[in-house]
Amino acid sequence: MKRSPGARLCATAAIGALSLSLLTACSDEGSKDGDAKSTASAAASGAASGAKALPKAALEKLLLTQGEIKGYKVTSGDDTLPASKSAVKTDKEACAPLAYAMSGLAPGDTESDASNTLTEDNASAAATKSPGDISESDLENAFKVNLTFVGLSSYEGDGAQKAFKSVSDGVAACSGGFGVTAQGQKQKITKVASDKAPGSGDESVAFTVDSDVEGEGSATFHTQVVRKGNTVASFYTVDFASLTSTGKSSAVPAAVVDAQIAKIK
Image 1: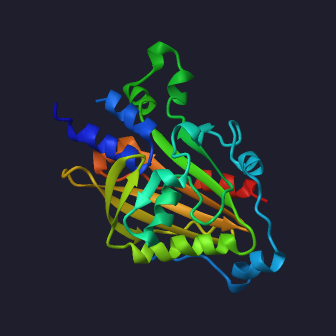
Image 2: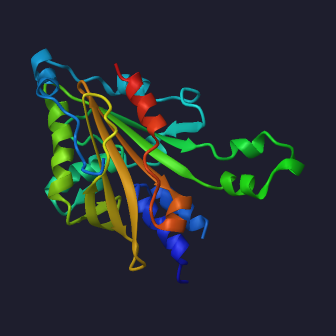
């Protein structure tokens, strides 16, 4: 049976999130100059300090937990994101860091990474009301799903600076698009463009990707990457309601970025 455009969009969004579990869920449901904020002193700080990579366990403690950010449910990234880089392949080497950042994996050369998923709690308004007071708008909001995938990675020496640069350089190098296969699912990125960087941490960069939706058009997704010391944080947002209505996912929530970066020492 041919799937509806909405189901196709949902499935492609899931592949864009590089998540087989999201793909299953969807099938069940039938400054814009891209500046990276950076300074020469910040870029040299890791090498000069002889920075040591944090172990995975320490990174997991730095991830936002339930209750630390109002209006979001926090869950482990283990069930929604690829377990390792071996599950994500690109047809252009320069574009691999972008695909990794979109999947909560370390964009640079390190074995130390951790991830989780933040889901905006759109059901909370309806949950606080009696059945007779729940409006149609409350019900619609309760079924909206806005996910942000967060990845943290830590590096030795100047590894974090190199990892960040690989993402920043990849935005320009991959502007014409690239192919990616995530856990056996193929996706075609048709365009990569600079987006407004959050200005957080020591360096930050943002980009959008346009993804082909099985011949039905394209969908746009947002990613932000921030370096703070020798830790790199990536943020990738999938907003199914916005994608269905406009073909564009909403921007990465500033509240998520601010709260996560503030937790990184």
